[in-house]
Image (tube, rainbow over all chains, first blue to last red; front, side, top):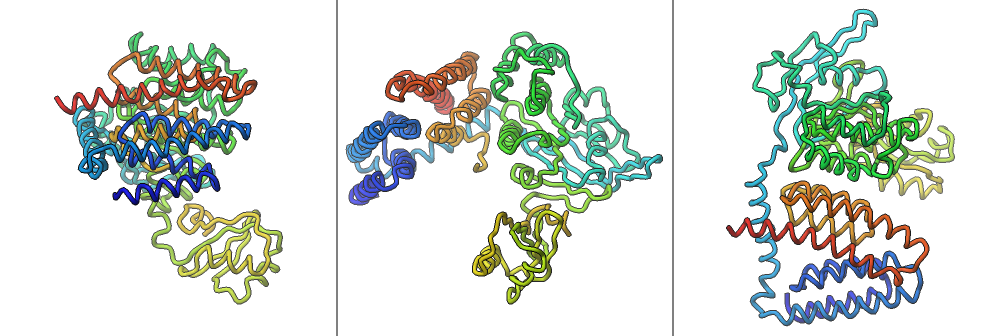
Length: 421
Length: 99
């Protein structure tokens, strides 16, 4: 980096502060991280950005923008005060420091992530009274990863879950838990294995007493000593945003908080496998995102990582966090693989559209546009088009025809496509 | 949300700073609690983060009635505490790295 270019970048940033202060405040942090040697300058940049987000009155904002200008000048000064050799090496030094620390952490806390916790091959279960059969299911659950199971109701998701947690005995195929015990296929010590599995069913069971009392109880019954028990309960109450509800009883909680409590109860004793059936059903959109992000972060904990098996009808939400997806239809696997591989071998693209037109009116608007077929599933239209047709092509055409679009989604690489095909 | 390698201590610290700069205090504290659980060897750090949860709750209540200027010193002290916890943990690992 030359001195001229840091001056140029600083000037551009100052100019942006007057035209787009919010974006400039974000860039100021990157600028400080990149050039400042003095760590206090980075702290100050973060503080100013935070101040700007919180400021409500115009004079407050003006004052903060002035402070940002001063900070930018101070970063330039700090950078130029360094000997030239150090200036060039700053980024390399930081990269080396980062790599060295990562290696040290890896040595001191060996990662359990990606180790296989559960493996099932050709798993099946036949119910004589209903005639329903789950069959030929291959499934591998890895520590630190989330596996999403999707499919319409009555297609075998809960049956599969109950087999995984030992509540139901499979009558075909093989299962084992390589990371829990060195056993052969199907020779399982369920008494031992169940000590490491938490299962949250769709219907949450009622409990007595307060949340906090129940969490201490769960931790105790799973063998945490008093000191660890207190620490684990404190952690999970705060981590899942339950502290303010710690003394509430079952009847005083909404459906969303009952689920959070069930999660806390399951996670407080640090299981190795969490199996959770349809957790998003009673949550609003914001709470769904929060719960899924929490699950993703918690599964990848360095100290207590876990494998998560989760079912849901909320396909897009699950696909955002799951590492792999199993799609079940009539008890059989339609798709199983990495989330990024969904739709990889598709023959056409598919798009969901909601607009203020009838099927025939939309067909008319699509005249002259290259597509294969148009369906309506009762809620939205689905346009199937050749692979070279993308979202921009379709949206561009419809907007050009002045179609008022309320909703649009490319589902070509979503399991949603498997539902509609 | 970009995928982070859990063992990448500095990247995880940066993630917390990003949440802080975005004024997402809830996510800042959640990930700080995870950071402490994963990397700290001091029992006091978890308690410090829990105290921060309570303090930020009070701060947010005050922010409804007062201007930022009035309670900025208190807010700055809380944010400095976030920095201090992360830096203490980073330094403890740097020490192990040298030894």
